[in-house]
Length: 338
Image: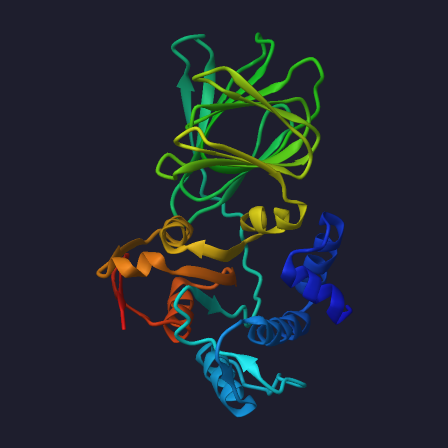
């Protein structure tokens, strides 16, 4: 595959068809993954604005990163005279996506319990995935739902209803089977109701997040703010963010769709993400708890890509590429400034 296409994938400028082609190429064999990892490491170093390193310093730094991962180092910088520094960047941490080893992402650890709705007296099923777990659910109508960590989905028997009813707390990707006579209604924990007929979308509605985020991949959708009955029409590639203060931000972000739905494929991507949000995602992803000893850490922003690496390797890269140190006590991780 051409380097230009791979660079566009790293930059997030490919369309969905191209993204799928790149992912298939990456998963074809380990050699492709290693080549991409090297290319991405080089590209990141070239494009970080900060103090410069010599080629020798760059090689030494990359050698240390790669060998800590247990792989033999090979020089990968080819035509770079000066590259950006990685260490001690005050607002941006960069964890290099060095080696991609595809892990089995969908885990058969979904908790399923039966329930009954007190208002409609309809029976239903509650699906739940704990922290550190992701899972896929196939609903009775054929719709597929991927649940991110620490999320729950409640499905109600809609056979005698005019609508397909589900309730979501957390994050999920929906691929909804089309039915023009029975729309799907998704009630979320943030007080936003989603109405679709047949479409695919990603929605994040964690109780302890400061905002609700909805990204439409295909089809059409309506968002309804339950407190005011305000209706928001959403079109493909639209992203709607509604804060807890009811501030609505709607924009078209086709180039960012890959980042939004990356979790579904087992990828964890941060792009200048505030550290408080980073810690929340890592807590859900790995089932750990973070504690900070210095609040100045919250001023940092984090840029990184991971693909099923264990938390130990994430922390190692964080420590190498930043001025943060960490200690681990069971599932508790304490972060402090060096």
